Image (cartoon, rainbow, N blue to C red; front, side, top):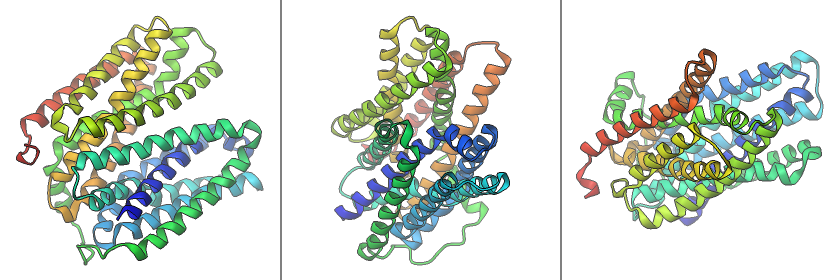
Length: 395
C-alpha cells in the first residue's frame, strides 16, 4: 500500500517537474529546431488543451482497468513525448520534419500524459481509506508543488550551456518511473469495478450535475491561476520599471520560492485541517484576495514578497479542498471519473484565464489586477454556495 502511494507521488512530481522544464525551454526549443516561437507556443497550447478530453477519459478508465495500468500509459506518453523533443534538438532535420516532430510530441503528450495527475489523485484516495480525502489531496498537491520547484531548480543548477544534457537525463528518469509503474501493476489489487463501462453523454452530464458547484469553483480558481501566470511578469515590469529579461528572471525566482512555500503550507495544512469545512477554503480565498489587492497597488519589495506569501498560501489550499469534496460526491467506484471532470475544469479555467488576460491587455480599459480581484470575489461567492450544501459526512 505504502509503495503504491509513493509511486503515485513520484508520478505526480515527475509530471510536474518535466512540465515546468519544457515550458521554460520553449524559446530554446524554437531556436534549436529553427521554428517560429509562435508555432512552438501554439503546439504546447493545443497539447495542453487536449487535457480537456483525455483527462476524464483516462481517469474514468482507471476505475475499471486499475490505477497503475493507466498511470503506466500516462508515463509512457510523457517519456515518448519528451524523448521526441530531445531527439529533435539533438539532431535537427529539415524545417517540416522538426515542425511535425514538435507537434507530434505535444499531441502525444496531451492525449496520454493527461492521465497522470487525476489518476494519481484517485490512487491516493484508494490507498489511504483510513484518512480524510482532504489529507490525501493535500499530499498529492504537495507532490505537484515539489515538482514545480524541482523543475526550475534542476535547470538553474544545470546551467544554460547544458540544456540538452538536462533534457536527456529527464527522458532517462521518465523511463525509470515507467519501469517502476509496470512493476507496480504486479503489486496492485484488482480494481473493484471489473468491467469497462461505456459511458454515455447523459451519464457524464449526470456526474457533472452532482459536482456542478465544485466544477465551477475549479474553473474560477484555475482562471485566476491562468491570469496570474500570463500577467505576473508584466506586473513586475510595470511596477519596478524592469526590462523584459529582468522581469522574466525575477518571475522565475518568485515561482521557485512560491512552490517551496506552497509545500510548507500544505504540510502545515495536513496538521491543522482535517476537512475542507475547518476553514482551509476560507483562508485560501482570503489570502488570494489580499494578494490581488496588494498587486493592484504594488509600491515596494516588501509588498511584493507579502503578495507572494499570500498567493502561495491560497494557491496551495484551495485545489486540495475542492478535490476532497469531489471525492464525496458519488460512488467510490467512480472517483476516477469525477477526478477526470475536475482535470477538465482545470483545463477550461487555464484556457479562459489566459484568454481573459490577453483580452484585458488588448483593451487596456482597466488593470489586470482588478480582473484578478473580481475573480476572487466570485470565487468567494461560489465557496459560500458550497458551505450551504455542506454534507453530513464532514460533521
